[in-house]
Length: 100
Image 1 (tube, rainbow, N blue to C red):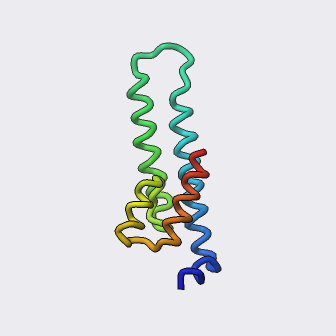
Image 2: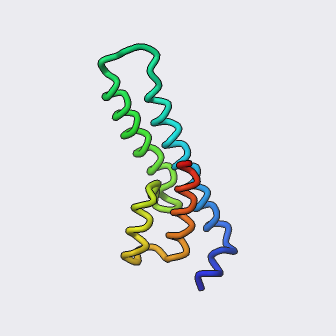
């Protein structure tokens, strides 16, 4: 039954959503660390960017795949059988590739 999921468009949209969200998260957080001049609010800027980015991205793709965005979360949900092994493997792979 899991191999049938590979043929469904919704499955690939979910995998693509995880890839996109992870890529955007890494891009936004790395972009917030660019320092043009010394500012005392550096830590605040990075932490607010990370928090708002992860919240926005999780809500954006949450209705598709759950908005996991983190490979550890995908592996934990796969280990506790909240998602199928096929979903867990492909979500984790997409997140690793998106974070690269």
